[in-house]
Length: 130
Image 1 (cartoon, rainbow, N blue to C red):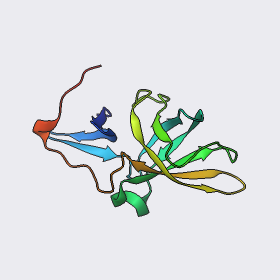
Image 2: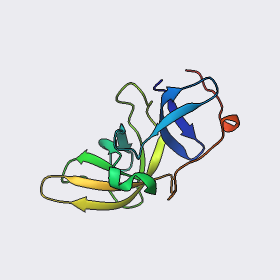
Image 3: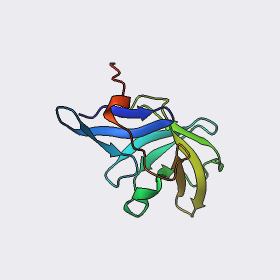
């Protein structure tokens, strides 16, 4: 449990339940998901969080950024390695829009440019050991 799930276009989420021939994945767009994130072009760190209203869109929110964060639409977002699940440098998505208020910056991140959830069969999954 807790192992990262990564496809060729980026991070999907982490394993939350397993069976003999299957596993369930908590995807980043779920409201119960969060991951430390990093934008190399600006050096900004934040938290990617799922949002119940955006769950089926392939979009999540990047939060806990300073009000003067230097982030641009099109910036790439990666895991920052802080925490115990996701190592640093896994691609998460692309900054799609930015909302600034006097207290904070919220950023909409499109996961690997997809607008629909990722689906794959078990025989397409490769087991990777650490």
